[in-house]
Length: 73
Image (cartoon, rainbow, N blue to C red; front, side, top):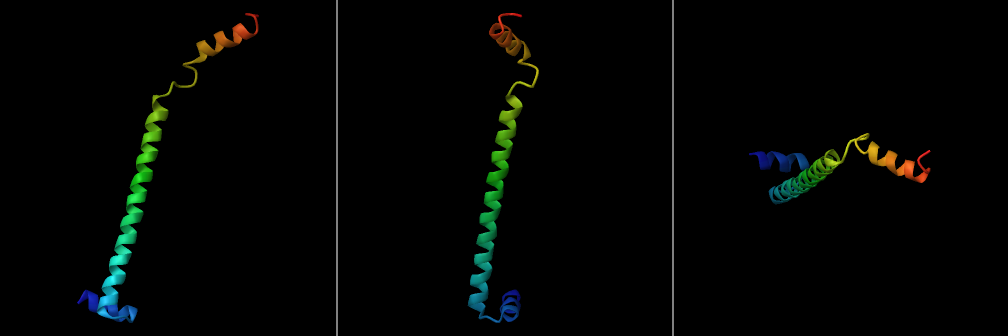
């Protein structure tokens, strides 16, 4: 029934309606996979960023570096 209704709405044959529906489903599946890959990449980047030292935690090393450059002024 659903295929007949789709074919009628699209003005195509039953076979073409099925082919079109399958092609759309595969295209949507590809989009879904890309979105999942993007989300995973973002999560991985967030985890790497979270593992880096926070601003200020390296302050002592930076101060020592700049003190050395300026001759401990």
